[in-house]
Image 1 (cartoon, rainbow, N blue to C red):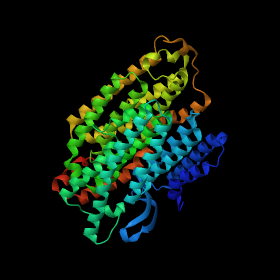
Image 2 (cartoon, rainbow, N blue to C red):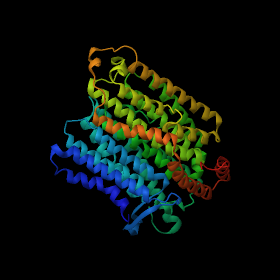
Image 3 (spheres, rainbow, N blue to C red):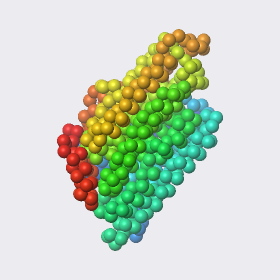
Image 4 (cartoon, rainbow, N blue to C red):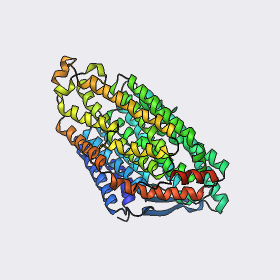
Length: 508
């Protein structure tokens, strides 16, 4: 267990390099084997994780460039643990379900390199390394969209890259300025995030730094009005690209808010709380209304992702344990549910080469297993109680209710709208008469597809009924972060907001 975090980060990339030597005929089995081993490593990490310890565990630290405070610094806590497991699990499931035949070797190796960057983002505690993994994640996803996407794949890939890269440049400026502030205060350089947590930053500097980091994270989420790259990326990406993009890459942005914005800039986070919340409400309602207007199944799910991520960010800025713990759990549930929904759209697209709802109808008659699993995932997406989607949404909204009941009520309408557009999609596609003759001969889910989808269904139900093992572990680290925020706050009004938002205790 001594170097398990290093193994988790770099094993997929090393296996990817060795994969160039693997014959094309064996590359699918090789890719799945690597992803299974990586997932097993993440489960071993969870088994060895002390849920009663709120701090970083399995820490690895080596001075990299000590004169400038750069180090190889890894650690995992309750906030990042399950995001690592989500990354390894979704990668494994996506590779099992992979149906692409074109240049499949390069695609699988790209996915393995992408897995390295995702896990690196969640485990790295040195901010320069964090930024390196953050930026490196763009390259394999750009290649996946551009190499295996639809007709407008290059436009979608370039738009994805330019949007996310532009936000990252401003974040880099903020990172360098933070290091300079630390040097001015202590006389030494450091890019270690735990060191930065000890720094009390002047209020005006917090406002500017919050803005620099906010833009990088907001574009990645993506938040309104920076969301326009996402529907293009999803619409043109191959199924495996959409699964990983929705399930994991978007969570890097919301993770950034929890890991950086709140604990580093508590006064600025409270100062911008209501403007950010208004943007979230716009995301929830506006994206839900656009989703209702779509005729393309994949676009419905893409806009649904934007709407759900609005609730994630709303919970993050609740400034209390319920909201933040709920938002992290909602990241996990959205990753599982949206990944499954994109996989299901990919299944029907492989059979009919269309994603338009008007081309279907009566699918429940010819593909009952497909219709059943789609229905379960749809119910989880709209937050039906006893499914995984309900837990995170409920806690996020309950948490933010203490900040503003009006904005919470408005955001709650997004759940109602979500039920409307999802049920309309289900009605048009699965019920009524079979529209086209070719639909009558469609084959139901095969063994490979069931192997990928059944574990997702199992988690949707299990974690909807019994989420406590995850919530209790996440809550420990969130409580510690809230204490840090209160201690670091300079403005009395910030302390008051944090204290008032937490007067009813945590999620235990």
